[in-house]
Length: 313
Image 1 (cartoon, rainbow, N blue to C red):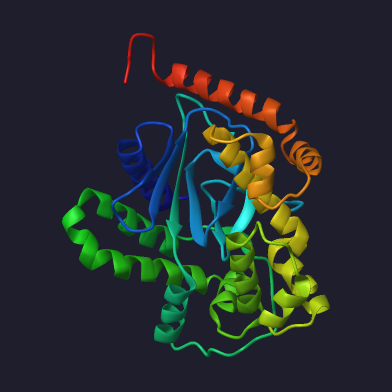
Image 2: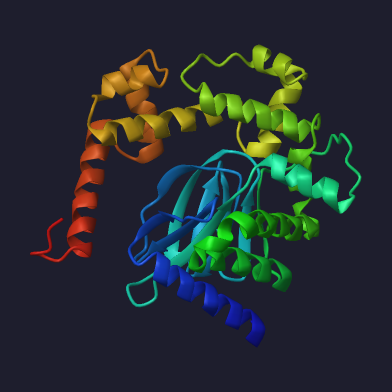
């Protein structure tokens, strides 16, 4: 890592340490910017990645999508082109050297605007690739990201400069030859863009019965083509994708404490509580009641670690 690159990384690190002083995810005033801090290795965290760029400034992270593992650290970055259910885990962190990262959210309309402005040929393409990529960080991208993140220090500049900064970041990502996949998801009518529509529908209507023929018709594909291209984008079949979304939502509902396992099962689309319990345990390692008890115990321990005895509020 050369001297210039390290200087840029150190500047990003200082900003994150200042504006994310405690562990957790911090939404910034800059639209689409999140800063993340973790002072110790994490258990697997189940979530849905939105279309975004993720950069680690200190430490490292591992993301599981389907059966594929994506690892990234300060020398690399991750892009997600569609909403994808993932399992993420911080792999390198400590109190002295916490995991520090940032996430920049974007949408395909912004990507398409950049493609048009750059004069690139925009055409319907049949090529479809995975909706998640890890690539090497280069100087031009890191420089653009730093300018965007530094806007947290000058809030008065955000309304004017943030839109231009995010456009430059998208442009730099698109310039990376390994990120041709991002273009595919922006092009209206492309197979990737049609699958992105199916992904969005499954994310919104996860509790509804899965009817592949109807999804295929909406995507203007045969059922077999839908299965093929859906797996190319997400690394899993539509039913596996729906199952992950359902179980993640059920876990969130249970952790909120407002309903029991049977009601959570019903709300996310399961007709059989026993079937729900088996699939829940297969995904999270424990049946619902025991898993939620363990999670709550971990949260209490985390709060006690962050707030010493005597510090209320």
